[in-house]
Length: 161
Length: 76
Image (cartoon, rainbow over all chains, first blue to last red; front, side, top):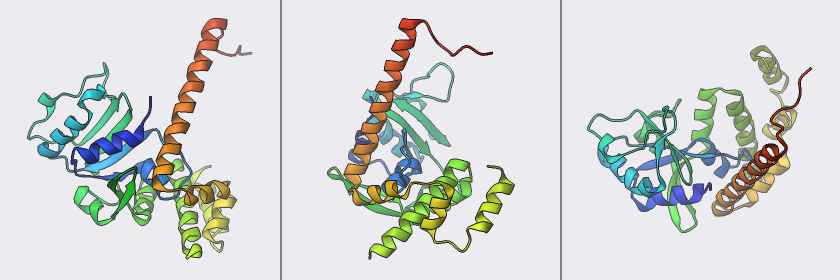
């Protein structure tokens, strides 16, 4: 049963260093396109990925891009960092990226992020401008639709103030 | 839309406001206005509700197809 709110909450509670990006960040910043997964860019160092593992370990996480649904286990976390982690869990998909196209890694994304408070927790999320940079760099048709939506949302926000 | 058509669209809409351009692209601005009225908590919960409803519909459709034995429309 999808519960993206709880996945995000778990990451915060487990002190995972991450910035929300992708479709959910775009939705929170004004896009109307619904999303099926939580995309985060995070510090891919082993300490942080261990915290991430702790956050989702009871949700039966597995590598959804690999054949055979290989479970995500603690033993896989070594000093050799993952580039990306594409996980499926009982609560929905969680994609952990080492880089966001057009911006860069976790450190760069932090500079393009802002805290968003929701449901009793605070989460770093790409700013509207940051998402626009990333979506333009991705350049797929659905990204371009998101660009037009977010530019319209930005204009609406400016006109409201 | 091809890349050439997309470039033509950008050229034809370059003097428009962002809202006008989005509308010309076929985006329903009322959905964006509705989204902007919500708090972040309301937004993420609305997304989760919609996902769960979509999954429930998909499950019901699969169940109906399994009962009827129809898995695809006949092709000519």
